[in-house]
Image (cartoon, rainbow, N blue to C red; front, side, top):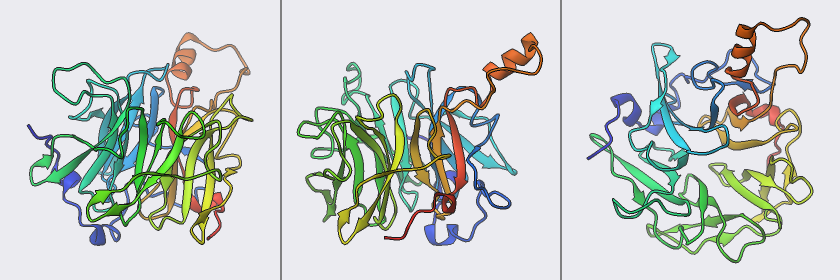
Amino acid sequence: MRYLLTFLSVAFVYSSIQAQPKSYAHAGALVQPRIFGEGIVSTGDYESHPAFSPGGDTLYFVKSGPDISKWTICVSYYKNGAWTVPSIAPFSGQYMDADPFFTKDGKTLYFISNRPLKAGDPAKADMDIWKMLRTKIGWSEPVRMEAPINSDKSEYYPTLTDKGTLYFGSRRDGGSGGSDIYRSVLVDGKYQQPENLGEAINTSGSEYEPFIFADEKILIFLAARPDHLDNADLYVSYNENGKWTPAERLPEPFNSGVTEFSPKVSRDGKYFFFASSRNRNPATTAKPETAAEMDKRLHSAGNGLSDIYQVDLSALNLRKP
Protein backbone atom coordinates (compact mmCIF):
# COMPACT_ATOMS: atom_id res chain seq x y z
CA MET A 1 0.00 0.00 0.00
CA ARG A 2 1.19 3.54 -0.69
CA TYR A 3 0.11 6.68 1.07
CA LEU A 4 -1.72 8.81 -1.49
CA LEU A 5 -1.35 12.57 -1.39
CA THR A 6 -2.72 15.33 -3.57
CA PHE A 7 -0.68 16.51 -6.53
CA LEU A 8 0.12 19.77 -4.76
CA SER A 9 1.73 17.96 -1.86
CA VAL A 10 4.04 15.83 -3.95
CA ALA A 11 4.93 17.71 -7.14
CA PHE A 12 7.83 19.84 -5.93
CA VAL A 13 10.56 21.45 -7.99
CA TYR A 14 12.70 23.39 -5.52
CA SER A 15 14.08 25.97 -7.93
CA SER A 16 10.62 27.06 -9.05
CA ILE A 17 9.17 26.95 -5.53
CA GLN A 18 11.28 29.88 -4.37
CA ALA A 19 9.33 32.29 -6.58
CA GLN A 20 5.92 31.08 -5.44
CA PRO A 21 3.94 33.01 -2.80
CA LYS A 22 4.10 31.35 0.59
CA SER A 23 1.00 30.22 2.42
CA TYR A 24 2.59 31.36 5.67
CA ALA A 25 3.57 34.84 4.39
CA HIS A 26 2.67 37.68 6.75
CA ALA A 27 1.91 41.24 5.66
CA GLY A 28 4.37 43.60 7.33
CA ALA A 29 6.99 42.89 9.97
CA LEU A 30 6.35 40.09 12.45
CA VAL A 31 8.72 40.97 15.29
CA GLN A 32 6.74 39.34 18.11
CA PRO A 33 5.86 35.62 18.09
CA ARG A 34 2.33 35.05 16.85
CA ILE A 35 0.22 31.90 17.10
CA PHE A 36 0.15 30.25 13.69
CA GLY A 37 -3.08 29.03 12.11
CA GLU A 38 -5.13 29.91 15.16
CA GLY A 39 -8.37 27.95 15.31
CA ILE A 40 -7.29 25.51 12.57
CA VAL A 41 -3.72 24.37 13.26
CA SER A 42 -3.25 25.78 16.77
CA THR A 43 -6.54 25.07 18.50
CA GLY A 44 -6.06 24.62 22.23
CA ASP A 45 -4.96 21.01 21.87
CA TYR A 46 -1.26 20.17 22.26
CA GLU A 47 0.17 21.13 18.83
CA SER A 48 3.85 21.31 17.90
CA HIS A 49 6.62 20.31 15.46
CA PRO A 50 5.56 21.98 12.19
CA ALA A 51 7.06 20.81 8.89
CA PHE A 52 6.10 22.69 5.72
CA SER A 53 6.59 21.21 2.28
CA PRO A 54 9.08 23.26 0.21
CA GLY A 55 6.16 24.83 -1.66
CA GLY A 56 4.44 25.76 1.59
CA ASP A 57 1.13 24.16 0.61
CA THR A 58 1.33 21.11 2.89
CA LEU A 59 1.90 21.18 6.64
CA TYR A 60 2.64 18.17 8.79
CA PHE A 61 2.61 18.75 12.54
CA VAL A 62 2.16 16.84 15.79
CA LYS A 63 -0.84 16.59 18.09
CA SER A 64 -0.34 15.08 21.54
CA GLY A 65 -2.35 14.42 24.65
CA PRO A 66 -2.26 17.08 27.40
CA ASP A 67 0.29 14.90 29.19
CA ILE A 68 2.39 14.79 25.97
CA SER A 69 1.29 11.23 25.26
CA LYS A 70 0.21 9.51 22.02
CA TRP A 71 2.10 11.63 19.52
CA THR A 72 0.27 11.71 16.19
CA ILE A 73 1.34 13.38 12.95
CA CYS A 74 -1.46 15.36 11.32
CA VAL A 75 -1.63 17.07 7.93
CA SER A 76 -3.29 20.23 6.61
CA TYR A 77 -3.31 21.61 3.05
CA TYR A 78 -3.35 25.23 1.94
CA LYS A 79 -6.27 25.56 -0.50
CA ASN A 80 -8.22 28.58 -1.72
CA GLY A 81 -6.33 30.91 0.60
CA ALA A 82 -6.83 28.94 3.83
CA TRP A 83 -5.56 25.87 5.68
CA THR A 84 -7.86 22.87 5.63
CA VAL A 85 -9.10 21.21 8.81
CA PRO A 86 -6.26 18.85 9.78
CA SER A 87 -6.59 15.10 9.47
CA ILE A 88 -4.36 12.30 10.72
CA ALA A 89 -1.58 11.66 8.21
CA PRO A 90 -2.18 8.34 6.40
CA PHE A 91 1.05 6.85 7.80
CA SER A 92 0.31 7.86 11.42
CA GLY A 93 -2.33 7.27 14.08
CA GLN A 94 -1.41 3.83 15.40
CA TYR A 95 1.99 4.28 17.02
CA MET A 96 3.90 7.19 18.56
CA ASP A 97 4.95 9.36 15.59
CA ALA A 98 6.54 12.82 15.69
CA ASP A 99 9.23 15.21 14.39
CA PRO A 100 8.41 15.39 10.65
CA PHE A 101 11.00 16.99 8.35
CA PHE A 102 11.01 17.59 4.57
CA THR A 103 14.19 17.55 2.52
CA LYS A 104 14.74 20.66 0.39
CA ASP A 105 13.42 18.98 -2.79
CA GLY A 106 10.34 17.59 -1.04
CA LYS A 107 11.20 14.07 -2.15
CA THR A 108 11.85 12.62 1.31
CA LEU A 109 9.94 12.97 4.57
CA TYR A 110 11.66 12.00 7.81
CA PHE A 111 9.97 11.38 11.15
CA ILE A 112 10.43 9.39 14.36
CA SER A 113 8.33 6.47 15.54
CA ASN A 114 8.17 3.60 18.00
CA ARG A 115 6.49 1.38 15.38
CA PRO A 116 7.79 -2.20 15.27
CA LEU A 117 10.28 -3.36 12.67
CA LYS A 118 7.98 -6.22 11.70
CA ALA A 119 4.23 -5.92 11.20
CA GLY A 120 2.31 -7.55 14.02
CA ASP A 121 5.06 -7.14 16.61
CA PRO A 122 4.48 -4.88 19.63
CA ALA A 123 5.60 -1.26 19.56
CA LYS A 124 9.26 -0.66 20.33
CA ALA A 125 10.38 0.70 23.68
CA ASP A 126 12.44 3.44 22.00
CA MET A 127 12.00 5.92 19.15
CA ASP A 128 13.74 5.47 15.79
CA ILE A 129 14.20 7.68 12.74
CA TRP A 130 12.16 6.61 9.70
CA LYS A 131 11.80 8.05 6.21
CA MET A 132 9.47 7.86 3.21
CA LEU A 133 10.28 8.58 -0.43
CA ARG A 134 8.00 10.43 -2.81
CA THR A 135 6.82 8.37 -5.77
CA LYS A 136 4.53 9.11 -8.72
CA ILE A 137 1.50 8.01 -6.69
CA GLY A 138 2.39 9.31 -3.23
CA TRP A 139 4.65 8.33 -0.35
CA SER A 140 6.37 4.96 -0.15
CA GLU A 141 6.04 2.74 2.87
CA PRO A 142 8.04 4.06 5.86
CA VAL A 143 11.58 2.68 6.05
CA ARG A 144 13.60 2.60 9.26
CA MET A 145 17.07 4.08 8.96
CA GLU A 146 19.75 1.52 9.68
CA ALA A 147 22.70 1.67 12.05
CA PRO A 148 24.72 3.70 12.76
CA ILE A 149 21.89 6.29 12.75
CA ASN A 150 19.45 4.33 14.89
CA SER A 151 20.65 2.64 18.06
CA ASP A 152 19.09 0.62 20.86
CA LYS A 153 18.13 3.93 22.54
CA SER A 154 15.83 6.70 21.33
CA GLU A 155 16.66 9.01 18.43
CA TYR A 156 14.83 12.29 17.87
CA TYR A 157 14.23 15.22 15.53
CA PRO A 158 16.09 14.58 12.27
CA THR A 159 17.01 17.68 10.24
CA LEU A 160 19.34 17.88 7.24
CA THR A 161 21.65 20.33 5.52
CA ASP A 162 21.40 20.90 1.78
CA LYS A 163 24.34 18.50 1.36
CA GLY A 164 22.48 15.77 3.23
CA THR A 165 24.35 15.89 6.54
CA LEU A 166 21.98 14.63 9.23
CA TYR A 167 21.59 16.21 12.67
CA PHE A 168 19.55 14.50 15.37
CA GLY A 169 19.20 13.95 19.10
CA SER A 170 19.92 10.61 20.74
CA ARG A 171 19.99 8.94 24.13
CA ARG A 172 22.60 6.42 22.96
CA ASP A 173 25.37 5.30 25.27
CA GLY A 174 28.53 7.40 25.45
CA GLY A 175 26.88 10.82 25.56
CA SER A 176 27.37 13.66 28.02
CA GLY A 177 23.89 13.62 29.55
CA GLY A 178 20.38 12.30 29.15
CA SER A 179 20.31 13.16 25.44
CA ASP A 180 22.97 14.64 23.15
CA ILE A 181 23.01 16.09 19.64
CA TYR A 182 24.84 14.20 16.90
CA ARG A 183 25.88 14.78 13.30
CA SER A 184 26.33 12.20 10.52
CA VAL A 185 27.85 12.91 7.11
CA LEU A 186 26.52 11.30 3.94
CA VAL A 187 29.34 9.67 1.92
CA ASP A 188 28.60 7.77 -1.30
CA GLY A 189 24.97 7.42 -0.28
CA LYS A 190 25.70 6.02 3.19
CA TYR A 191 25.60 7.77 6.55
CA GLN A 192 28.81 7.57 8.55
CA GLN A 193 29.30 6.98 12.27
CA PRO A 194 27.52 9.83 14.10
CA GLU A 195 29.75 12.46 15.69
CA ASN A 196 28.84 13.93 19.08
CA LEU A 197 28.88 17.73 18.75
CA GLY A 198 30.89 18.08 21.94
CA GLU A 199 30.90 20.25 25.02
CA ALA A 200 30.05 23.51 23.22
CA ILE A 201 26.60 21.99 22.59
CA ASN A 202 26.09 19.00 24.88
CA THR A 203 26.07 19.07 28.69
CA SER A 204 25.17 16.80 31.60
CA GLY A 205 21.56 17.86 31.02
CA SER A 206 19.66 16.99 27.85
CA GLU A 207 20.07 18.50 24.39
CA TYR A 208 17.83 17.47 21.53
CA GLU A 209 15.61 18.75 18.70
CA PRO A 210 18.39 20.34 16.60
CA PHE A 211 17.46 22.50 13.63
CA ILE A 212 20.48 22.88 11.38
CA PHE A 213 20.53 25.71 8.83
CA ALA A 214 20.88 24.58 5.22
CA ASP A 215 24.49 25.83 4.97
CA GLU A 216 25.42 24.25 8.35
CA LYS A 217 26.46 27.61 9.81
CA ILE A 218 23.83 27.97 12.56
CA LEU A 219 22.26 25.44 14.91
CA ILE A 220 19.15 26.14 17.02
CA PHE A 221 18.17 23.43 19.46
CA LEU A 222 16.21 22.54 22.58
CA ALA A 223 18.01 22.00 25.86
CA ALA A 224 17.14 21.25 29.47
CA ARG A 225 20.32 22.45 31.17
CA PRO A 226 21.43 21.60 34.73
CA ASP A 227 20.91 25.23 35.79
CA HIS A 228 17.46 25.44 34.18
CA LEU A 229 15.82 22.06 34.65
CA ASP A 230 12.33 23.36 35.44
CA ASN A 231 11.79 24.22 31.77
CA ALA A 232 13.46 23.53 28.43
CA ASP A 233 14.62 26.46 26.31
CA LEU A 234 15.90 27.20 22.82
CA TYR A 235 19.64 27.77 22.32
CA VAL A 236 21.77 28.84 19.37
CA SER A 237 25.34 28.03 18.35
CA TYR A 238 27.44 29.19 15.38
CA ASN A 239 29.81 27.16 13.24
CA GLU A 240 33.00 29.23 13.08
CA ASN A 241 35.93 27.73 11.20
CA GLY A 242 34.52 24.24 11.66
CA LYS A 243 33.95 24.56 15.42
CA TRP A 244 30.72 25.23 17.28
CA THR A 245 30.65 28.24 19.59
CA PRO A 246 29.39 27.79 23.17
CA ALA A 247 25.60 27.67 22.97
CA GLU A 248 23.67 30.80 23.94
CA ARG A 249 20.10 30.85 25.22
CA LEU A 250 17.76 32.76 22.92
CA PRO A 251 16.35 35.86 24.65
CA GLU A 252 12.73 36.69 25.36
CA PRO A 253 10.21 36.64 23.73
CA PHE A 254 11.53 33.55 21.92
CA ASN A 255 12.04 31.89 25.29
CA SER A 256 9.75 32.50 28.23
CA GLY A 257 9.09 31.08 31.67
CA VAL A 258 7.74 27.87 30.14
CA THR A 259 8.93 25.30 27.60
CA GLU A 260 9.83 26.30 24.04
CA PHE A 261 10.76 23.61 21.53
CA SER A 262 10.60 22.26 17.93
CA PRO A 263 12.55 25.07 16.17
CA LYS A 264 12.22 25.34 12.38
CA VAL A 265 13.12 27.95 9.75
CA SER A 266 10.99 28.32 6.62
CA ARG A 267 12.59 27.22 3.38
CA ASP A 268 12.76 30.82 2.13
CA GLY A 269 14.72 31.78 5.26
CA LYS A 270 12.24 34.47 6.29
CA TYR A 271 10.36 32.96 9.23
CA PHE A 272 11.17 31.14 12.44
CA PHE A 273 8.62 28.64 13.75
CA PHE A 274 8.61 27.03 17.17
CA ALA A 275 6.23 25.57 19.75
CA SER A 276 5.56 27.01 23.19
CA SER A 277 3.37 26.19 26.17
CA ARG A 278 3.08 29.86 27.16
CA ASN A 279 -0.32 30.97 28.44
CA ARG A 280 -1.61 34.28 27.08
CA ASN A 281 -4.67 34.41 29.35
CA PRO A 282 -4.56 36.67 32.45
CA ALA A 283 -4.77 35.10 35.90
CA THR A 284 -7.64 37.42 36.81
CA THR A 285 -10.35 39.18 34.82
CA ALA A 286 -12.11 42.53 35.19
CA LYS A 287 -15.38 40.75 35.93
CA PRO A 288 -16.48 37.17 36.65
CA GLU A 289 -16.35 34.85 33.65
CA THR A 290 -19.43 33.15 32.34
CA ALA A 291 -19.35 29.39 31.86
CA ALA A 292 -19.19 29.93 28.09
CA GLU A 293 -16.24 32.33 28.43
CA MET A 294 -14.39 29.92 30.68
CA ASP A 295 -15.01 27.03 28.29
CA LYS A 296 -13.69 29.08 25.36
CA ARG A 297 -10.57 30.09 27.30
CA LEU A 298 -9.83 26.51 28.34
CA HIS A 299 -10.29 25.09 24.85
CA SER A 300 -8.65 27.75 22.67
CA ALA A 301 -5.10 28.43 21.51
CA GLY A 302 -2.95 30.18 24.10
CA ASN A 303 -4.39 28.15 26.98
CA GLY A 304 -1.01 26.96 28.29
CA LEU A 305 -0.78 23.62 26.50
CA SER A 306 1.29 23.99 23.32
CA ASP A 307 0.79 26.10 20.21
CA ILE A 308 2.84 26.70 17.09
CA TYR A 309 4.31 30.21 16.85
CA GLN A 310 5.70 32.21 13.92
CA VAL A 311 8.03 35.23 13.91
CA ASP A 312 10.40 36.93 11.47
CA LEU A 313 13.76 35.17 11.56
CA SER A 314 15.41 38.59 11.50
CA ALA A 315 13.78 39.35 14.88
CA LEU A 316 16.15 36.82 16.49
CA ASN A 317 19.13 39.04 15.57
CA LEU A 318 21.29 36.04 14.74
CA ARG A 319 24.82 36.92 13.74
CA LYS A 320 26.48 35.70 10.56
CA PRO A 321 29.32 33.31 11.43
